[in-house]
Image (cartoon, rainbow, N blue to C red):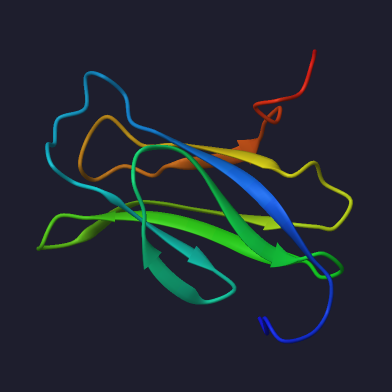
Length: 106
């Protein structure tokens, strides 16, 4: 993903942790187009290419193993909002799905 050329768009990603999760102080890692970056729980925005399909992935890491991995191929025609739901147990899979943007009216 090059920031020097090409059209870009902003996507919203809501990272949700269940209130009854059996792990503490673990933060998600976001992977966009193969580049990992630390993230926070809650709503965030990221910049992606506007005219390309981008794979958005999220995982959790507890110093011993990765868990909660989920990916979504975001196409240019998809709405710019995703929601990641973490597993309740520290060895399950997460889920990424399309959602309604925070400012949108239903």
